[in-house]
Image (cartoon, rainbow, N blue to C red; front, side, top):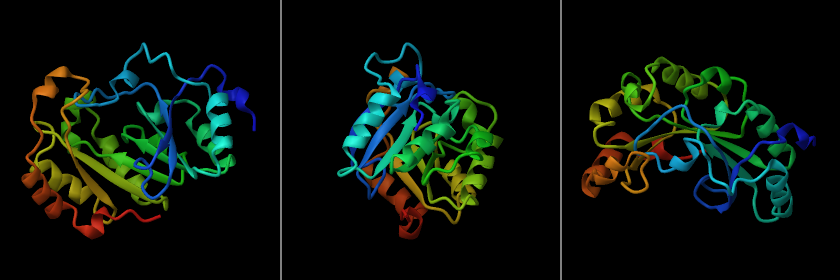
Amino acid sequence: MNTSAFEGCRFGLEKVSMNDYPGHPAAVLFIPGCNLRCPYCHNGSLVNAPFPEDLVSFDEAAAYLRKRRNVLDSVCISGGEPTLFPKIEMLIESLQKLGYRVKLDTNGTLPERLALLRPDFIAMDVKTSPQKYRLLGTEDGERIRQSIELIKTSGIPHQFRTTLVPGITDETDLDVIAELTAGSPWVLHNFRNNRCLDPAFEHISPIADDIFLKLRQRYTPDDRSLIVY
């Protein structure tokens, strides 16, 4: 495998995660840089430069993965937004050649890039209804619709995810997302008001647990939240 193609590229590395690729022990490779500015983002250090100094080279990450093949079976590529990385297709293929399943996390803003990729699993964050993506830094919500449809028809195992953030995602938005993602796994998460990109969101209270549970039961009954591999 020619790793020189990634010379100069730096990544965040979480060595072991039991949560990012459900059902699989995984390492997480974080690609810095994002084209959205979600105010509640918890990975703010990977959104704007300067990026953290402890990022690793691909050679370092690959050396670790070779050593851990008896423990790990998957790599999750997250960010930031991975599809912004010019060599994302090559990165996925390189990790697969190392013997790993690859899960791709994406915000779905670049459907033309997604169409070229063949990871083993895709998780797309559908943050709100397409017309409200202006709140997150883009006016082009139509690309979100395109990515959802592309993923649904790709033949690749996948999952859609939505975080319920007061002021950004309400029940009207959930109705829209439910229709767009119909027939595919969809998981709801509650907003956490810590380490937010916009500090003002740390003063916004999450949805009360009982209300969140009712919404999750309403919108994601068991057959919608199951993850099928």
